[in-house]
Image: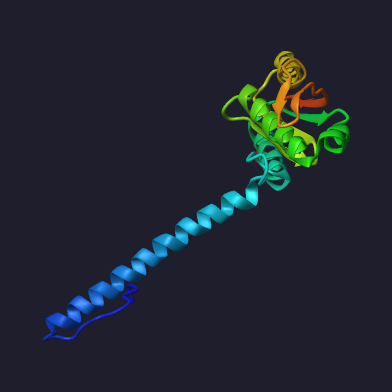
Length: 183
């Protein structure tokens, strides 16, 4: 009733006991490997395979979660959408390998300017989304400028040479609301 997987009757045979302990050990090791594999799959499901930042699914889940938390705790939340300008020109002129290098570097730069508890991810194609919480209105514009500056001000070293890449951005900031009460 307590969940035993095996038992031995007394008097027991020492060889049989060793055999069953060995079999139990194998089962535990397999369960550990399965748990590790499932954790890796969860990471793969939520991560963009090219840029290694959050994918659209993970971003939308985070945004929904933060929005729900905002409504409970009355904190501000912001979303910043960053779109690389004329990205198709990079792919068409220099090839998709070069374009991929640019995307990877954009993700790295955007992630570097975010706070550790904010999230940045690849929304799709050449679009990236940042989700920032507990941020005052006066700071969101600064974060947007840091996003743009990280891309626009420093050229990208690629297999096709050094490229100037620019981006455009839109942002939305939702102020704190009154705390939710269960009355």
